[in-house]
Length: 195
Image (cartoon, rainbow, N blue to C red; front, side, top):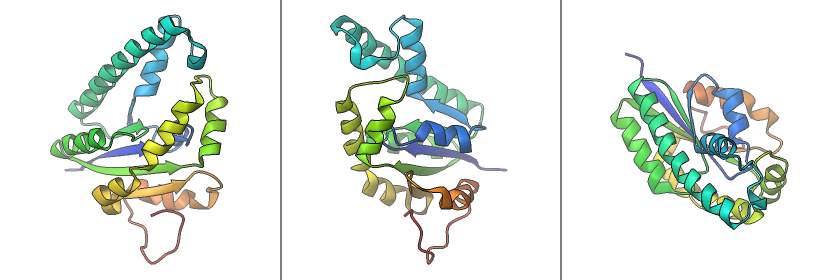
């Protein structure tokens, strides 16, 4: 019986997670709270320029984000029930949530992996500014510190199923990334730009 795979793709807002998932894991069942949140914002007529919301719009947006988290949990459960390979596109700011999801997935027959995408704070801020969904710079800064503050925890917990990828100037890593996704463990003696 083929063991199912679940990838956590983590990193700060603006690190390239969603692009990475579209380019490398598009055939996986995608669990992404931001995509659901954006749909809810648009459906409720708020648009995606969160930093420009007035106080009332911010309150509505906060409720919609809680709704998005619940819907995303249901999307995860559906993927597990249907025994699909899964990718969870998330900042990774809450290590307890990630590790509990990992336990849930492994208890349901999944082999779990983590891909942490790293970009400098300046690059993340620039990329978020260029998006359709723009939020305040303080959220990018918070997500950057909280996400990357968990690197040691994730490396310890996922061990050789953890990879840290620098998303600035990483063209030479494409084959190594593909090997990792396919389940090929990198040669530990080879010097490269991931842990």
